[in-house]
Structure formats: structure tokens, C-alpha cells
Length: 114
Length: 109
Image (tube, rainbow over all chains, first blue to last red; front, side, top):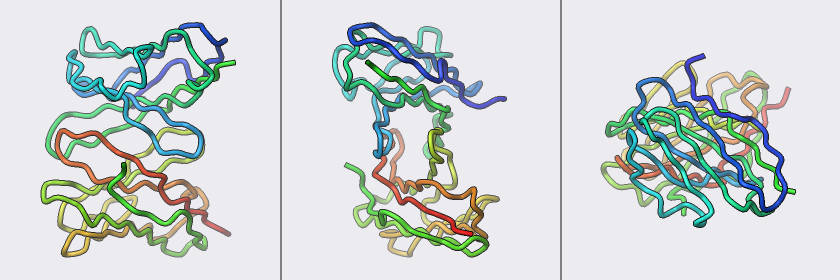
């Protein structure tokens, strides 16, 4: 399968714990995006990378959220001190940058904070 | 906020064409219209996109009005597996994707 992959697919954690999600983009895609989706809503943009550079992070929900893409390939999204309101689907997408770039999404990681 | 307006829900009979409208009256000249769909509990799936001209691929057709203020996604022969939430997104180069609530399409046998 050459699509975007995300791990884990499901994560249950207790409030206050830290969690980390991984995204592996489509090979040779230089842009990688993170979104959050809550029940009944469309995906909400969080941040994105072009290669290893994080070009937009002002939309991250709080300073508890951080993302990295150290070698310009896979990316991780970390949430520190999780809260029940962090329960959502976290989606990753990748694209090859050009004017009409198309983003391809992974299956998502569903987080439940108890 | 999303730059598009879509009906909340639509029904379509299996085997018939599904026509999903989208209004984007504030679209700029360099912004594309993208359509994605999301089947329950899965990631969004890319369907089609266009700038000015009508587009067709193996999944769907996209009809964009001449003034570009609205568009219609056409699924020519809807099947039960096309039941999903369909998102219409307007996006310029280098900007992020802003999803609205989309249209929940239900294909009925």
C-alpha cells in the first residue's frame, strides 16, 4: 500500500498523560499536514511541513500540541497533558507541492481521553 | 470559516445520478474547487478538483459555472457505497484546506 499511513489507529489514554501519533506520508511527497476532526464536524487544520520545515503552526490548538518532521519523511504529533476535550480523530495528509496540489489523507488516529 | 455553502443532507436512489451543489460566491481567481468525501470513520478521500473548466475522472464530474461562484459534483451512477459526507473546498496555492460541515449523501436502494 503506497498511501498515507498512521499509527496507532486507536489510542485510549487517561487524562494528563502524553500521547504521540505517527504519520508516514506518500513517498516523495514533500508536504505533510495534520488535522483534527471532532464528531459531526469537518477536519480542522492544525499545522503543516514542507520537507522538515514547519511552515505554519499558529493553528495548533494550544502549547500542549507539538509536531515534528525531523528528516522530512515521517512526522509525529504529540499532545502533552491530555484533556478530555482532546478526544477526536487526528488526520494526516500529504501532497507534492505545486499550485494545484492535492492532499491525500491517511485513515486517522482516533484518540479517546478518559 | 469555510468559504463554501452546501446543503446539509441529500438523498439519491441507487443507480441514479447524484448532483451535489456547492456555492462559493467569494472565490478568487487563483483558487481551485476541491471535492473530498468521507465515509464513516475513515479519512477523507480525494474525488476531483478544478479551476475554471469542467473536469471528469473515473469517480465523478465537476461542473463549474462560468462566473465560478458555484459548482456541482456529479456521481453518474450512485451506489450504496457512495453514501458519505461530501466536502466542497475552495483553496488557493499555499493555503490550508478549510472544511465545512459538508453534505451527507445517502444513497437508497
